Image (cartoon, rainbow, N blue to C red; front, side, top):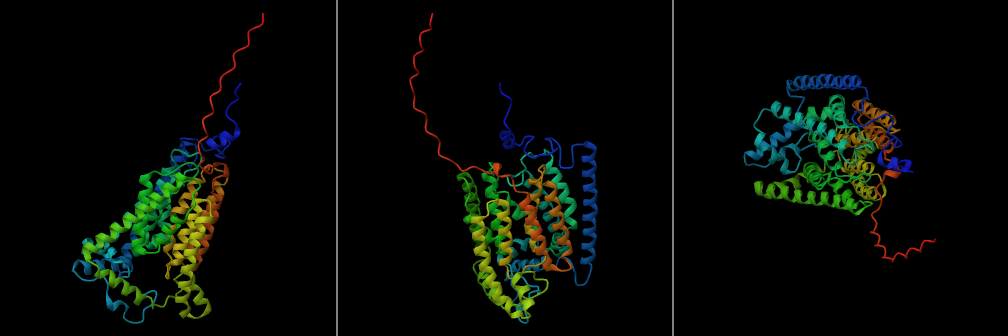
Length: 455
């Protein structure tokens, strides 16, 4: 008589023995009680309305100052877009003429950024900034929902309402997370990085779940866009190329993302050359050369080269240290891809390495790690370590806010994040099995003739 599935089978199927606790299909992460779930979701909406309203009031007050204290990063892009729309160069040679410091404001992005913003550069800054903030915030919330359903963010026993709850919690928490809020208020391009890096995270496989080809292609396109805007995300492409997936189907997913990134990058460059010719790109290279003489040592530049130069009391060390750390970061990216087995943890370290490549790392740049935090939280739902993961992420959140007073402390928040990621790892029995060659068909054997029945 069959007594039912064995414990190991139940564990692999995400059954009662899979560590799912009291989470049952059809309920969300706020509990099984309908009244409790409704109260928690309404509370998230109330907190979200308060937080975003407060951010809007603060932004309006900062914009009313003379000069405006909000949107100045975006204003640099719009000014460059105006120069492009007028038929000129996006670069202002007077901006870097003398005494260049790491905190000096000047347009130093590739020409394609100004070319994209040229059509809206004549609109009022407050209007563009409003659309900028709404788009980046909506992208973050949508990404939270998508990660909860993706292979890398889906727990073994997934509540049906996990995507909704993840989106609501993100909507409530985002306006109070200062690195992201400041990126929005300044109008910095990094406000879009939770969406772009999140799209790359969606391409990661976990267990036996593999993302679709469309998802992998979209992640590659997102990586190409991020790399053309800020350059440093291109090291994540190195990470994708150096990975050693456990199965051929996982390798195909990564190859799709790499191919899409290369194709999208080539298309972006081609369109930029058609629109503006090669002149803006030559000027961009000259601008990088001039900007290479900037003084990088600054308290608000949390890059390791800047901080070590400040500790040594010699700001001139920042430049050679930045080059050295950049080389180390690229080498570390390859090593991480080869050695770290958990794809989410490996991806997180690759993102950190991409930030170290930068000679200047501002306080809000690590918002690129938000998708890693979201995936760690969602994949830990219903597991015995779920509360520990949540606690570590709360610590990460609080340190990130407190680092506004001491920006370099943001690296402590990153360390706390990786504790949460490590605790959220699926159990080994849920890891993907290496693909094996199909077993040969058994040879046909003649069945023996039945023995004559005895009388």
